[in-house]
Image (cartoon, rainbow, N blue to C red):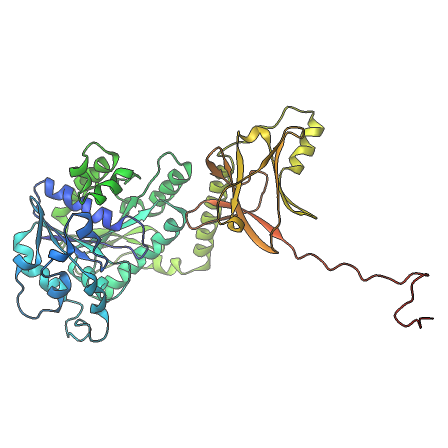
Length: 450
């Protein structure tokens, strides 16, 4: 039995979706497949239509038990060639003091012991790990022959990919167990130039450690989960089914070499370059690790990230290119200086040309990201809206005919958690009015009234 851990500390990257649908594809290919849910949220059971009240034993019971387990009580047949070892919320307490795992002398080897009992039944095992790093993650990595790390093609996920690889390597080395690790691009939008650039950067940085199959965004994946079915059973003609079929085909090609002790390439996350490792742990290219710790290399990575961020921001600002009204050059330049966001005595004035779109709204932190429509001023040829904002830094975007983008007339921006650029306006505190000066007809503070 070959075992793969699907792991990522970041939530919302498609980890459970990948575990369920990859397991289903492997099972349909005739591989006797075991899916182990090592996440206390029990999403694998929900996504495969397994009713939690009918679960007899779960994986937490198996990890606690010192006696041989009863597979028929633990395993839930999902479909032909696919069984689930489910979890329940009780798994969350397993890592706590007195939870039943911490006090075990072999606490980091318990899952491997359980799987060794089940191995004769299966060809492949997938472990859906929890997002936290602890004893459960240690158990998964010790039991696994390889790890798949789903990575969403967004800016911050790209920044965290190196950290994820480094974390998996560190944990596996701590256990004295070397793993092969691959990145799986997920939640990818091929229509977004931003996502395409990030995917290219992911491949450039990590090379062959990025699997060739890319999982695109597909609403059918959520629909399938809500019906308790893998996507290949829910609708085999969808994008999601095609992508997970491609991933499954690639994994099938890797299975024969897993756990064989053959030499294989391993990525040094600090540089994203291959280093050859063999079954006796010998390692070439040790000087690369020294180079990775130098300031020169850190500066290089910083420059790459900065260059990519600038490139993405420019693309985002040009997503809906502003078409300027046909006016004289001097008037056109004057109009450009008026567009954007600027301070006035009445508040922050947002101004955009009418040619930008049929309907323009502003959304930001100051209105809980709910669109507030700009007023149409036909005489001036602009959309305009004045908003009173508290002193401080405010992030906002424009909504142009349902498309959201950064303000093309504001050069200051910041990336949000999803890698989207938000325009920034800073509001300064209003200075206090100057103290009134006494006049000839008014007595000063030291003047005696008569």
